[in-house]
Image 1 (cartoon, helix red, strand yellow):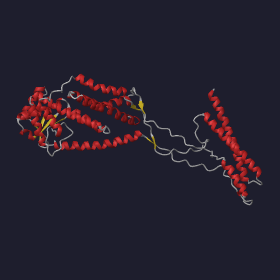
Image 2 (image 1 turned 90 degrees about the vertical axis):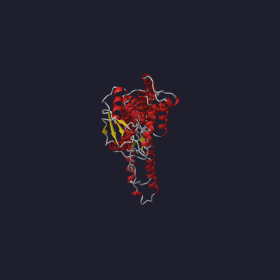
Image 3 (image 1 turned 180 degrees about the vertical axis):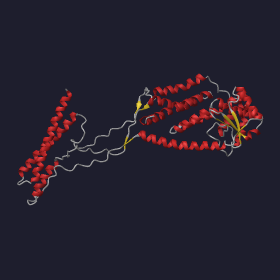
Amino acid sequence: MPTDLLAPWLLTYLLHSTLLLMAAWLIVRLWRGMPLSAQECLWRTALLGGALTASAQVAIGWEPWSGHLTVPQIDAAAPATAAAPPGEEPLRPSTAAAAVAAAESAPADESRSVVVPVAPTRAKPSAAGTQVDLGSVAGLVWLAGLALLLLRSHRTRAQLRRRLAGRAPLASGPLHARFEALLADIGRHGRIALLETPGMGSPVAFGVLRPQIVVPARTRELPAPQQEALLAHELAHHVRRDPLWLALTRSVTTVLFFQPLNLLAAKRLRETSELLCDAWAAQHTGRGRELAECLTAVAGWLVGERAPLAVPAMAAHGSMLERRVGRLLEGTAHRSTRVHRSSARLLAAVPLLAVALLAPSVANVAASTPAPTPSSPILAPAESTAQALALLDEEIARLETECTTLLDLLGQVRDAPEALRQGAARLAGHLTTLKTRRAALARGAQESTR
């Protein structure tokens, strides 16, 4: 993505994702009996939809109904003082009259040494005002935050790899036989590997291209019905492609970390995934109560141990564990989970289309024009030819008045200093130059209008 589109895209995504995620939260909040599969589809759309609508409006050029928002650049320093054109010295007409008054008040023996500063030294311009490029600032902040989160994610993955380093294939025994029976029931015989490790406290399902299920060695201690329920729950994660969705969710929350509502969506998606896997396992094995007992047993194994966050794990604590166990014991785990796939997609598409068509986008960052600073009319840049002519006319009128005053004063001074007479001649010459420029500018304006 070009750097000039980075800041508009990030700001547009922040706006659109906020609208989508808040809409998803509100819909789920108001619709108490909303099916779990519909909730999952809605949260997935809200999590990913902001990037799609922002890309459509900013990168592709989709024109939203509400138009664009423009963010100006920020002036970080005072604007520069205008400088005189090359070869020209800024004149201060009042200096001539002041010099004449000084010559009159000077003693007779010192009057010839008076120097007239008709052409004072040009004022030094101040440092030019710098503008803060919001695109560059946003890009640097985003890259810095992304680097920190990628480092944290790498450490989490490394910790998980260390805990899974001792896993070994489980190719025989009662646990393997029950797993093979479950695979045969769903027609996936030999496509998912079952492994065992002593370094994990909770069973996990991971792998997109090479799906695997890793169970703790303590799983052998569970009764056979609970083992079957546990394996069915982990198998449900692969049937639903949860490892792929979890990886995508973690990528979004990492890359687009500046949207805090993404964490809410990720949490809701994890909870919904576990509830749906519980429902799938209870429905396919008919062992909802055994699965509830298994969840309680596995939660006890994890006391004092942090469950891995990079893969779908069966373990749960607190209110979420109570909710899952309660649904399984009451026999309501598989209720309110079924919904027609097209209906769920239609429900999720409504807020997505609304944001894409109606929500504004952030236009390219526009540079704000600094306000012109007061300076000499000759030095200020004219916005039009008419303004330039008006400024020249004002300066010419001022200089004519100064010249008249200076000549009158020279006529009253006996033995006027030579420097004063030279200054008056320079002032008259500058007046002639201004009149010549004024005539040339007027001729150019007339020729351009023909």
